[in-house]
Image (cartoon, rainbow, N blue to C red; front, side):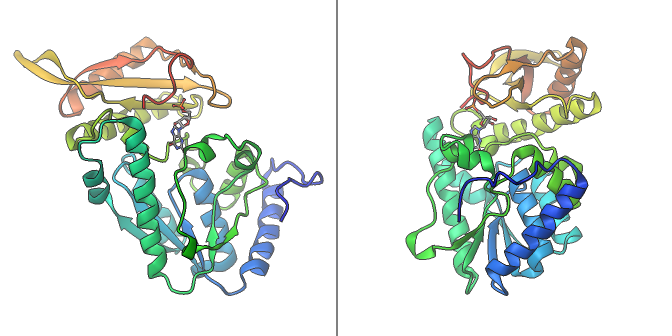
Length: 325
Ligand code: XMP
């Protein structure tokens, strides 16, 4: 099949155009897979979620969604995947709690590239194990979108590690492969996915693993997860959630002296990052109101265990990257 978006294809900007696209893809998917089963790694990100919702409409329980919780997801994310896809959409969803397994593999590993490789390789291994448990699946659905095809050096293509072994070769089902991100969101909304899922900010595959700097420990990982939840809550409350391109927290692997309840403390800092960009190649820092930064600092230092300071990262890309690892 061609990998060039047909010139005649209209840009999907409205619910009506999305409905027409969905109908067309339902027909195409049914023609491709018949009554065969299709496997999908459902991360809960925009692309895989939209593919899931589309294929549930097209083939129902013949879509087998596998959600791997690697323990590095944001607060509430795995629960949302189960709620939306299993409870609301009645999907055939396999939920794999692999958190312990990933944390064990990552124990003592401080080098960023090594951490990424371990997370990527372990993800493939877990997914492969689940794929082998499912008998007779010939098709693999993927949330490939047009920028992934256009830019061979795209973030997704660049960061994804490895692939499935030779004997697990599937025929691909890629219903979004000619869509741009904004079109994927329009289609997602038309499919009834929650706003928060469709408008989600980008989140790296290795998840919080690249934001818990150095060798991951459980206490710092929880500090990243809890502080990130506070930051997201405050950005949502203050109208920044849909406006700022990406925002998150980072916890480094050193502590500093502070004072709490009149006693000396020795705890971790949390670094806040909020950036805007068009293509993630360069980025500028969001000018977050100072009072809001102070409020977030107050909340994090009082609600997150083991944290006594909050810093705001003022560095654009370059010279920084968006993530810290
Ligand atoms: P950097 O840190 O390179 O990040 O400036 C650019 C964008 O890419 C995201 N990112 C990733 N996305 N898998 C992904 O799918 C990854 O391993 C990964 N690493 C970074 C990052 O969040 C930012 O949006």
